[in-house]
Length: 153
Image (tube, rainbow, N blue to C red; front, side, top):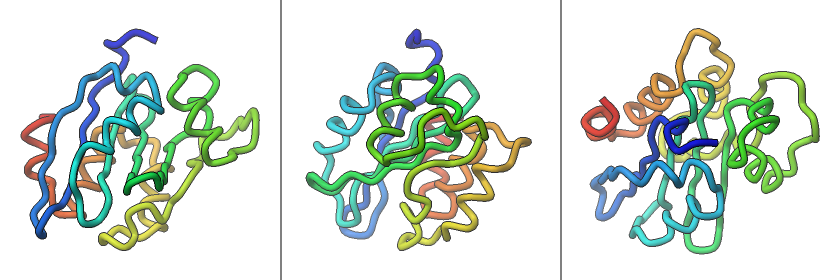
């Protein structure tokens, strides 16, 4: 995977009730462990959210609070070709060789912040949405849509 295959990587964290969104290096979209480790440096009263879009094909959401890591991969078939997807699938004990483009991981990852698992699942299943559009919707529902849009465009 080349770094230009990564559309974007961001971190969003809420401290004292206000969201801050920062762009992270694209190379973090290639390596799940490095991505997760990078999130650990930000303060947050709800856990730091990491979002990555890869090759206009799939997205990853990671939520880290200290050593506790939760993750969602929008499309299980991404694990055939992308190292970050392979690592995430292993973390969440996804079945091997899934041939259906179904989400794997924690669909409840942001339910306490205002986006129900059913709604997140529908975003993952919508073939008409690009990953950046799905993540923009998530960001908007959670309250940092304008900051997300300023970075991602």
